[in-house]
Image (cartoon, rainbow, N blue to C red; front, side, top):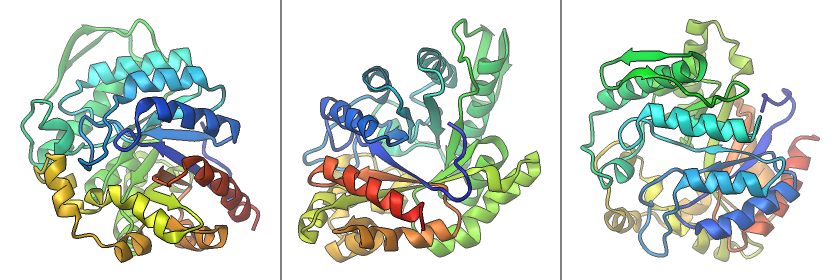
Amino acid sequence: MSKLTEDKTRLSIQAAHEQVNPLELLDDVMYLDKKEIERCWTSDHYMPWWDSGASGGAAWPWMGAALARTSKLAIGTGVTAPILRYHPAIVAQVFATLAYMFPQRVFLGIGRGEALNEVPSGNSWPTNKEKFRRLKESIKLIKKLWTEDWVNFNGEFYSVKDSKLYTRPTYPIPIYIAGLGEQSAQLAGKEGDGYITNELDINKIKDTLLPAVKKGCAKSGKDYEQLEKILFIPASYDENKQKAIESIRFWRGSMIKAFFDVDVHDPRKIEENGQAIDDDSLEKKLFVISDEEEGVKKLKPYLDIGFTEIVFTNSSPNRKKFVDILTRISDIINNQ
């Protein structure tokens, strides 16, 4: 679970419940374990980013099944939003239980969430400022419940009274904080074990987001170089480039960054808007490849600015073939 050595980058997979049903994802993680992929992240969504051909499995019960079916693979969420549909105390209990059952193999990714998860599950969509304050407060409460005996907490948004987790993790569960803006990036540096982003603009990452992470580290006395920096990117591989592109069209809606902030929560509307993203944009902006050399070339700019882990949302026509080529790409970039 610790950070890799400086000269090695971890390549991981996201189990995407939006696109693949939970039974097939179980088969996928057993293959990841066999191929010695270190980590699997799982999306934690109530609704998907696309309507046609979508799935909608719940991350938490699936994680328990996936951990039980594998022996080495570490599994966590990318990401859970402990702000509305999940109370932070329940998030703390669930992950404490998973970590107790599967020591050193569980981690928690958290963020401010999206309207497609919170509004259809019965909540109003807050302002960005409120979402950030909720996230910040939820982190504080989760950490208290993991480390203190009896917790009484009365915050701006959440409260617990005489609360105790009787089944606790036997190790510190890593918390990775996701964000697309400076505030969340700084919070990750200050309070997290790592920073997650799906921002793919190299200049924004280099000039705005990573400096904010570094500023957060300075505030808490952390070593920025030791903090994990994690990039999420939709990916598709096939020897036939057109087939790879066709398979990744499912993720066009998630490429519209406004949907991470505004209240657009209906997958049918997201799909309608996503039609504006053409195939050229998919190939240029996402990890769409037809061989190892192309994969290494596409990763290099992100590795050069300091990402320690790349998480691929595997949207390939044959997901096992993507895992196979990923192991070869990993060997290349970590042995150069």
